[in-house]
Amino acid sequence: MGYAHDWVSVAGLNKDEVLSRLGVTDHGEPLDYPRRGDLVWALTPQGRVVIVTDYGELSLDRIAELSKGASLVAARAEGNDCTSSVWGYEDGRQVWSVATEDETERLYDEKVEEGLVVQGDPPSEFVVIRDRYLAERDAEDEDSEDSLIMAPLELAEALGGWQPEGEVGQDLQFFGVARSFTSAPAVSEKKKPPLALGLLIMALVIAAALTWVL
Image (cartoon, rainbow, N blue to C red; front, top):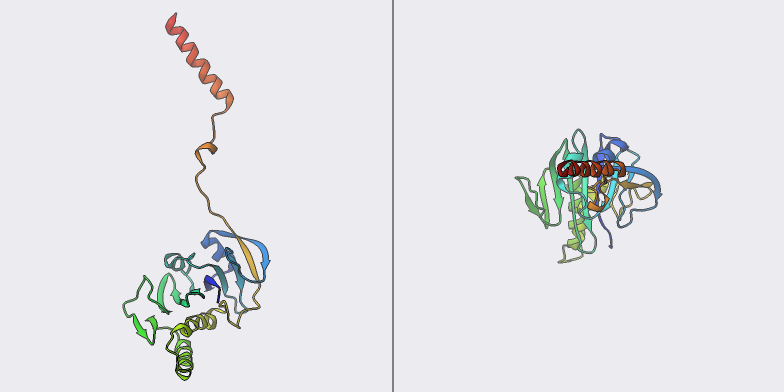
């Protein structure tokens, strides 16, 4: 499991609205699968807009802003560390989450259920998924919690239509996105006064000096 992704699946906004809120533009390059360093989008058969980027790229504040006037499922997973999280947002507010480890932002009713940190009231799909993975783990008599990484991921897939190693959504057509960050120009790149203006200023200074001397 070598993936390390953040992703969101948005309902209630079209693709252009989602990209605009993220401050990026679609450059239409089709991709088979999100690669490290990519920021990509896809559309599920249900009309949800999926955005995939590198691990840690999407802050919870940015996700909350993206969900205003809409609803979304957001997720984060690191395959090598066997950690994963999934959040549910409605109209700018986090309403539930499930994670294999504690996150910095908490809801008032956080609780730990068999190694999973649960906040709020996740959809009914969570109980079914969690119980299945716990049953499989107990049947194999495993002490490791690593297998539980798949519970948040499968919940994200069931609700949002994609996850890195899932079966659902693996035929989605992804497209590359051009990041449109802006920054102040470097000092050397700042505009210089036109040559004619510079010469005029110099002439006025010389004229004033000559008048003073005479």
